[in-house]
Image (cartoon, rainbow, N blue to C red; front, side, top):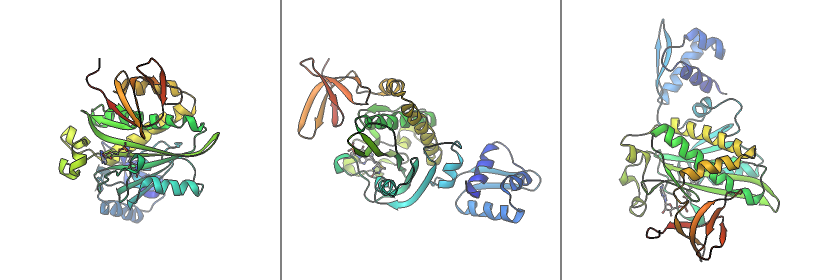
Amino acid sequence: MTTDAQLLAALREHRNGYIAASEVMRRLGLSLAALDGRVADLRELGYQIEVKPHLGCRLLSSPDVLHADDLMARLPANRVVGRDIRVFKETTSTNDVAEKLARDGVKQGVVIFAESQTKGRGRLGRKWESPVGKGLWFSVLLRPQLLPTEATQLTVVGATALARAVQSQTDIAPDIKWPNDLLIGGRKVAGILTEMSAEVDRVNHVIIGIGLDVNQAASDFPPDVRKLATSLKLERGQPVHRGDLAAAILIELERDYARVCRGEFAALADEWESRCTTIGQHVTVLIGERRVQGRAESLDDSGALLLRTEHGRIERIIGGDVTVEKSRP
Ligand code: BT5
């Protein structure tokens, strides 16, 4: 951990009170002048840190910018997800940056955030709007011991962890729409783009790309997206601190990824199903040119959607665009 990360971690441990400057200096191995320097640098970045002669230091507030050290300081020590975090002011697509790192042999767990993306993308090359500083646009590189056919489990990891973190930070429980959307009141608040490199019987790596609309006003969305999208701020009526939210999401991702790695996908799928509005509905799934209709029954062991068609057959669906048919019983 860097010195800034250690300092922020120490200040956060004493969130409701002061930590003595002497204790910080001892823990971090800093002189008083060096501590003053670190505090000044963090203040430059927008952290409000109070220093009182006889009481010590206290963190009053953190800026709404993403700061890699600060995020890492909030995560547990032996984590996989967020073992390394990199924040870019601007990238093309965080999935592309993660893909490059994957090809360079970087270990799993690295997380790439960008304050904005110039080529943020959804599935099938669709555009993902990623305005500066308004949302969380990030990608997680994983190297799971899964078969390529089981990689859909990681989209389930992403959606469940994201829904749980949003709920804990905002008290809003988003609905999951299979396979990769989070909705609030029927409007899309997040999307997940899972990309994989694999051989026939082995996954090389998976990149989970997450886009979460946090602090946009309606006017921040282009008109075509505004009709179907929302942000946490719009739903809650007040802004949400992106750093707090990002840390909460990474902690939940760690938890659900560990469940999958331990072979406990069934328990995760149960939670996913309880949050998913697609299950039990009559739906139409568009897979390229192909259209399949039926009742969404459940997830199978690999994370695919099981659809019972009108002829009573079960179809296993691993991707596509789902529309819920409102008029069906
Ligand atoms: C998705 O695709 O929902 C996956 C989005 C993944 C974005 C993340 S951001 C970090 C990482 N880096 C990337 O480049 N991508 C990932 P899909 O289901 O195909 O939905 C795309 C559709 O959502 C678009 O065609 C628009 O209609 C709509 N859309 C675009 N931007 C949006 C936004 N900010 N919020 C809500 N909806 C949006």
